[in-house]
Length: 514
Image: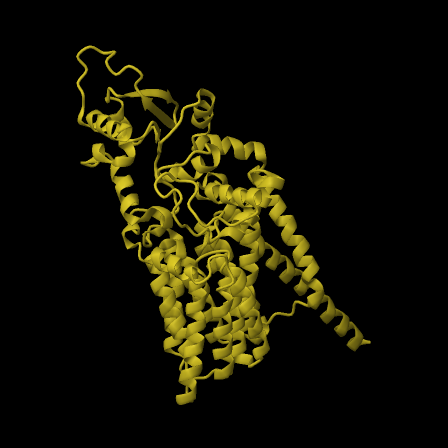
């Protein structure tokens, strides 16, 4: 009788523990959605040119291979390397409106959290450690939960790390067969599939080194790694641009002049807590690797690659965050009392609870199409675009990089600048920033001289100079935007001084007339 009571008590405690762990996982998976909802997803201007390309693909049932949306590169070869992402996000937008953009980001935040937790869980069964490391990684990445294709890259990277680090331990090489499929999709989603290939290259190098130095431990045979690497390499060619996708990647990597110009490309500033969390992950991973009894070749090379990628650009902090917690999980000792006891039967409970918490997050944030539209109008030139359409003003258009993506979508007019750095190149982007900042030589910018329509942020330094140009008319202004068009009667003001800028415009007009 006492044994039966003891057994019942043990089962009750086990059931209670499972429920507790299930709820804890649900909270863990839902927390990144709160990070995402803190940010104005619809005011991320790059998502708008992605939407426009997705719409063009749907309308024309083809992938564009030439530039369509800018005056500078119109008709020149251009690779829409994120075309599959653009179809996904446009499909959500079609069905759900603005909230579709938020749904994409939130769904990806949950999926990435689950994937990172599975990496940690596979390498270390300590429940508390797994939850803690996953939360630390997600908190560190909180700022990059924006509606970009890189969220899918982060997911694929986590899946790849999970497969490689797991198979290196178990030797169950058939699981590697998922990698070519992942790379086939990844290549059509985002150009940073290159990061995944580099990690795969580390795995291949480790297998080669293990043939010569037995102290390097891996259960993946060399022939398997060679075959999988070649298969993944071949899979990356299954895209509309073929081998030229590598030229796109090379061109983007070589745009080093943009690193200090564009915020997301700039190095980590170490001004926020999440920056220092990343440093903590790095230091902890370095310490545990230095104390490891075996030669952790793969982990050491992975950490080195992560440092280079993440410290080069703050938008890539996810590489070090995921690699760091994976290394910590693989090296730290497990605590028997903390091992996961969650049964597969509890998965539906975790799923339902996660969806419930995410729904509560949406309700708490007041996320709906009407509210998102108000946010959009407070941050982007929605009213200015309406005025331009109503009055029928035409280009050539001059605009800054920040608003370019939104103008591609809303104005349906070729823009002078937008966030597609592979279209405009470093030189033009740096020149655009200099002009908008009123640096010396602003009045000789060829794009500005030939513009018939200028849409500017009202606070931009250039606006104050354009106000005093007799050849321009301030035709519209609100708190966000100022719109300039050519002065209809430049001689209306007697004795008006012809500025160097206006003289330059006259010269360009005469050349175009000839």
